[in-house]
Length: 159
Image 1 (spheres, rainbow, N blue to C red):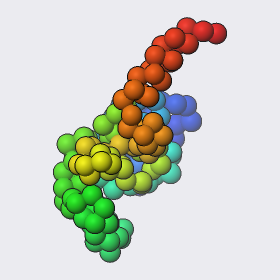
Image 2 (cartoon, one colour):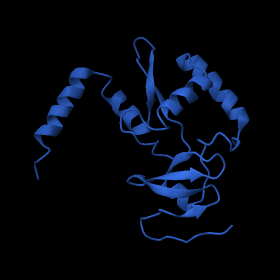
Image 3 (cartoon, rainbow, N blue to C red):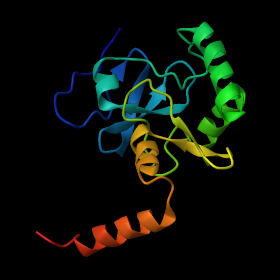
Image 4 (tube, one colour):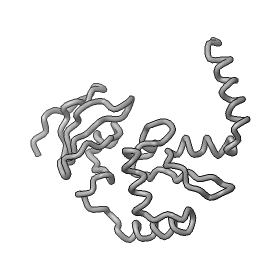
């Protein structure tokens, strides 16, 4: 494999590895990578580029474990009443990013969590682990979230 350059700084733009070429910075610690397998642009974490890992987001790159996809489809159907195909459609419509913070999950390779209303069971969107746990910790309570927001605003300039 012809490597363009090994980069030790924080700018990975132009770096080429087995699965793609880094086009630009997406957000802090995340990069837009043109996939060599499908030609689409996927968001990679810096660590994944450094480790020259492939992404599960590429439809052309076969999944490592098809049996796991079948198992996960069953989990989604039982737990949330959606299929893996519906999950993947939501994932694609969100560009693989959390519906709240707009970042991929904090752990490379982990699927975004299915957020749902605990009272009605209605699926809302896909969230990263941090945002999903955050909503859970606030028990989906609007008043509690509003109080937390006011608290953060009140102390945002305090040093």
